[in-house]
Amino acid sequence: MRITFICGLFLLYFHPATCQESLQPNKTVIIRIDSLFKYYGVIIDSSTDVPIIIEAFKDRFNPNINEIVNAEMIFLQSYNETNQATAARSNAKFIKDVKKEFKKYNRQYVGYIDIHGNPNIITQLFDYSKKRIVNREIGDSWKRRFIIMFSEHPSFTTLTYRVNLKEKKLYAF
Image 1 (cartoon, one colour):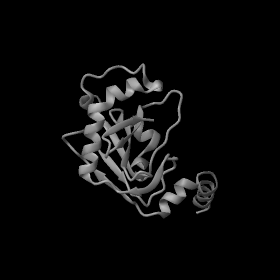
Image 2: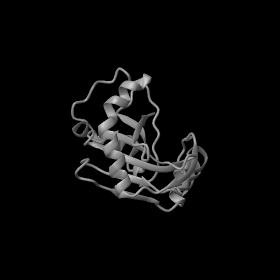
Image 3: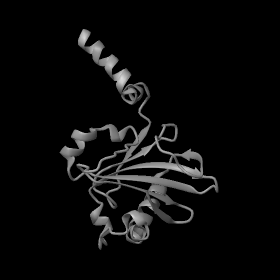
Image 4: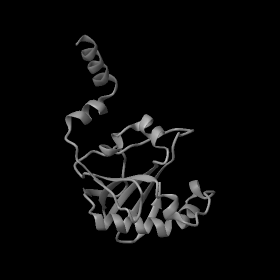
């Protein structure tokens, strides 16, 4: 009992997100679109806080499956062009089969409306082909909250993109 109490205090003091998460109901929807990817995607509910600053932000929304499929198709069609046009990723290799390359990536989706009224979907991808490493690093937390990782030498690959659904345009972060 005493050890549990001390661990609880430790978590409250040093890791408030863990405690906050356990108090909030799970507000995500897990999806799988076999025609696009092998593993899973998670739609982060619009009422769930996302710890990122979004420029030109107006409001959040919950994307539906059709909007996610549209965002995925824009990603597949525009991936190479967007990477070459983005200074930070201009040295990225050209990928012949983008769908195959990212088939083993899990996804997180955050929908928002910009100040111009355009629906946008932020897609966070992380390589799930190294399942053991991902489980060791983040466990199942990616199913409940938006994951942000900073590392000079990450143990698995993460990528973040934004798709403007109205303009049908992909932006790299």
